[in-house]
Image (tube, rainbow, N blue to C red):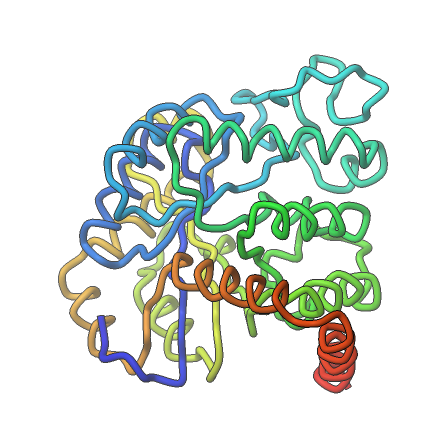
Length: 318
């Protein structure tokens, strides 16, 4: 993309891989073109196995797990892998995940959440995916009720997790209605203390745009507006096809985004920006090096490092 060394690092990431065939084909094509640097697969979704087969065959792909606790489409649904009872609070009356994060936060039993998320990660590995990271579909897994699970799984599997310095910097926070900055910060401080890199910002697909307007100016503005540090773009590329049946009113938002990023003129413009476009694999290796170094330190040194990290986290939010 650009010469390494820019003070602005971005991950151009496709969420919702595995949701449908069009999401998979878009991820593969744009990864090959170099304008999608990472993606995350929804393991419970119908087209997971197609994506897993492609990822197992091509180790160059950068693919994490989009931890899934919600099924938000009106008529296109998915269920937990673990077949929990209704008492676990993960599912509606039909056995599908709840459509909204607020209901999941209110009803889901944390132990059932952990069992389900662990099953999704294990299934991705079993299918041959070299998992690069964890992130959260609709932000559900990083909500305060479940964020300790999210971080614990990242530690156990030695995988980076997506968290930003503040709730305001996490653009997909529209699904986290009622979450306070204080509640969000508990997870951020814990993750930083454990050695995870914290993103400066997460920027999502321009969901509110009308169909009639050209989209390139909006995306150029988003990218030009990236500040120094590490930024995660939560994008939703999708090739046309079945998506128009899944969400007929809003499919154009994903398909137009896909068409823009495969456009040669836009790709040439992107390549000329002062950015380092990276995937999640290097962050995974950084995390694993950090965790290995910490494991080799005497306990006293670890405690001092943890205290310094907590102080730094407090300063960064004041």
